[in-house]
Image 1 (cartoon, rainbow, N blue to C red):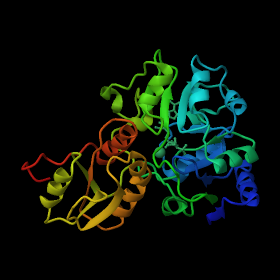
Image 2 (tube, protein in one colour):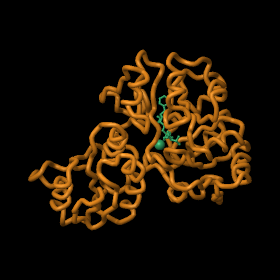
Image 3 (cartoon, rainbow, N blue to C red):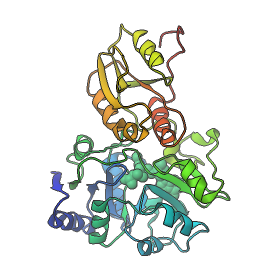
Image 4 (cartoon, rainbow, N blue to C red):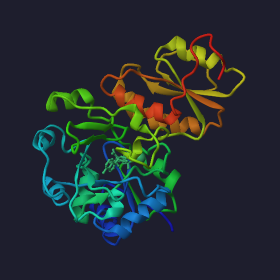
Length: 343
Ligand code: TXA
Ligand code: MG
């Protein structure tokens, strides 16, 4: 199959893409977080194609994207307590809610679960595509399973060219890390994935929120709260190691491996002697660091390196989402402390 690139500017392209969705095909499209790979969420056969194109295991459920509260209500039998507060605070936006599902949603979309993950994206192209398709759109991130999520149409094509009908090119995604996933079916709201809506922001609206016990992070298929929580995910092919958060720790981690070809995600202005450096953005500017994270990992992955090293930010605000992605991308591999054993 030839994958066509449609400019997201014109209404004709949106109509073209919506026609593909209505006919049961696959279209990648931009959202404010990352690009999604969309299919008609009410058509099980179409949704199944997403799993094939991504090589995604069928036990990992998809997010259903809507463009209005009315459409959201069409995929759930009732709205949970606190929904209104969350809707007015964060929607449309980078928040995905896990809610009991209605029979309208095919089992393949939810991987047989009784719950569905729903999201109302803030990106105008995503909204216009869903409105023109006139059906909710099931969409995971538009990358091969387990790999780094795409924040440009080029990233999508690098992974999925020839496997999907079209990509709507809407330029670079603003936020750059995936939505926060919040489970509203537990007694207390539970953050299944950290994202652009931070724990602090949710706490201001909901009071208390839970984060999962690390013991639930594996194994992937059985009894897992959210299958995407498995330990290695969002990963480049090159081995990734993490250093602690300061310039001297990153510099030492690189210098201790001079016999290897080392690349690094380097905060602007840090003096690091790596063979390949990606200018990540000013340390402390978490918005920029999040938006450039995946582009940086993808670029470094193309530089034929032995190892990539990245400094790990703290848990506050957007740091929580960046940290979670880096820990998963590296499988949690930290550089040994200063003077420690070489790895
Ligand atoms: O920002 C985003 O969320 C992007 C854009 C395209 O919307 N989408 C995205 O989808 O990141 P995906 O499939 O890569 O990640 C969805 C996560 C996975 O970890 C999946 O296991 C979890 O949500 N999930 C989906 N449905 C669920 C459910 N019913 N219960 C628990 N977790 C669920
Ligand atoms: Mg994904």
